[in-house]
Image 1 (cartoon, helix red, strand yellow):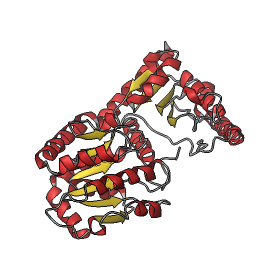
Image 2 (cartoon, one colour; image 1 turned 90 degrees about the vertical axis):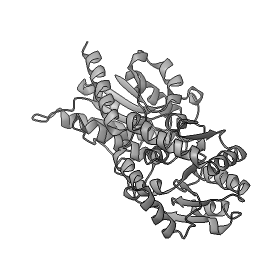
Image 3 (cartoon, one colour; image 1 turned 60 degrees about the vertical axis):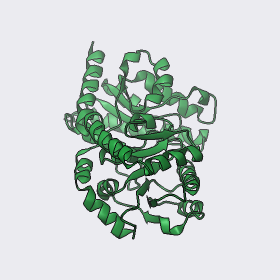
Length: 374
């Protein structure tokens, strides 16, 4: 996918950074390579070229770490492998150095066998079979990954996580942050503020925005305003999807820095995101850690993040009518929103905090190391 040092914001980049922070709690983490292995087009020629490039990088790393006076790493850790993005480096390096090999957030799709990504698909599968430990961040992935593993015990579940402290701190100043949102976007103080946060690009993100626009059109007679934070190449198409909505209800705020998000989450009343084909949704997790209830589509690993009926409500994916009904219900039931807010703060603190993940990751790495040595 993309490097954790990438300037382009995304959920996978944030999770990569969170994994590094969690691992750093007990280990020294070195970013060995910023090589991007994703082939989005299904081009076998491109996949072969990526395999060659990744092999060269692996060879150079091994040569360096086998040099006199150089200490090799104790383990290799790769994030986000699937049929479009194989790991062309980690398996070779870990085998050459005889060190444990770990992977986080992997998925396996048997229907891709023999298809346009077959080369990358088979490399990804081979890497999973070699792994000493696989960390699953979405419960949906386990069903297809577990059957191909020589030892299913090497598969470990880990809840998506973030540093909840600054988000919870922002919630304590909710009144101030809400007043700032109201003033910044000229909103009515007594009108519930809906919030959407997402990159504006073609494909699933644009589809999510279109479902959101269709849903809000259905409840246009209700009492609400929507602030959208996000930007990207599909911004024109996103804005076009909302043309039928009263412009006085809408604010397109553009891109925002990660440091500003806690205050934005805390100041809003309800996050609304249809989540078309979302893996789990870091923005939705962060929002709940700031006490913001969520209405989202029930897809991928989203149910791992949004507890349906506890911290938010989930709807059939792509169903604008169901989404509109869920939003309308929470708009007219502030007591339910308050209950969801309290639940979200409590559950994210005990299940999704960086410190919890750090302890869990350290345990998983220790299990893998012991099993390899046995």
